[in-house]
Length: 518
Image (cartoon, rainbow, N blue to C red; front, side, top):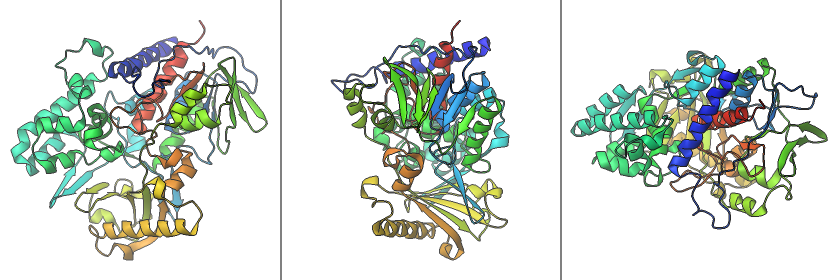
């Protein structure tokens, strides 16, 4: 076990060095009085070899989203006694699924990155002894723009070939762009980025916005739009998007592919739960944590109703606003720090309309993702890659409809029901630009709004990616000002998205392991 622990101690250091290099944690500009991104250098003390009482754990994870499940699965695999508490009836957060009339619908996740040899999802599966082909299937992505219909397999050479076919005047630049992008991704996994020359691809991408990188290589506006077609995974405009963020959260799908979880997103989350439980960990759904207990600036456990669970390590998978404003007593944390966290801007939300159809859409398009920029609609057709998600001869189709939390009526009101009907009709009308007579084939539909996401995930404003991910935006360090209290969620580095929160889980795991008593 020591060899495994040492391996992830190194990974934790690498993760921190990435952030430090980017200046992520060292900025003093966001809050003059309180620097939420300041590094906290405490070391939690955790010894999995020491016997524990029945209500005592090496680590307690609050929230069973993918970041929390990742941390817990890695710890359990390495013989730590772990408890995971989830306020909802099922694990996964946004990476969840639910059934309606035989159709499996997604809560939000429809494309997952990180399955190349250095990708975080691949590392997670390898570490846990899981296999990609058992859990995920490669997506095809079609982009419709200016009368062009371009379909990508999700692999670099095919992306270059398809783009060069439709934009031949940019073909040389396309190849150069993807070569540098791939090199920057590979260099981003380097343990010593400071040693990279200033001319390196990584440093070029780390010092620019995505718009600047696109303008550096291309003049064709439509080509740039195609390469921005997945920026919804960040929720920012290209001129406000750090190039590295676009590289990892959007462009990587063109280079290494995007994947849909077989059996629905919830199946992947449940597989992580199985790993935890198989290795002696405990996962308790329908268990909302009321308070994280702190004594003399250190975590000592959590309270759920009248039940107390003890631990010197608590990993928070809930949003930092919820953590610091509701789960900690005012005496436990500097309220200036809490105020600074509460002032952070949330990422965007959306409305999601899921449809069950009496139509086999695979006969119309083999793609599982369609971005129609001419009509402003993005479709996900997961049954095109996993037929088990719908009854035989039928299909599942999801539509993301632009929505803002501030203009969404209160949940349960008459105005709210009218709002849902409006989003449903808007989704139908847009899909009919691609699939004529679409509404005639609807068997069942279900609308989720920003309010729905907030209720389901406890994420403030139903934000898809936690805090705003624009260039210059700050996030708190993964070790909070309270000793033993970690963040493993979209609230901290590297941000929102499945691959990003898996990386946050690895970082927490590595740091916890490094604190094991000798």
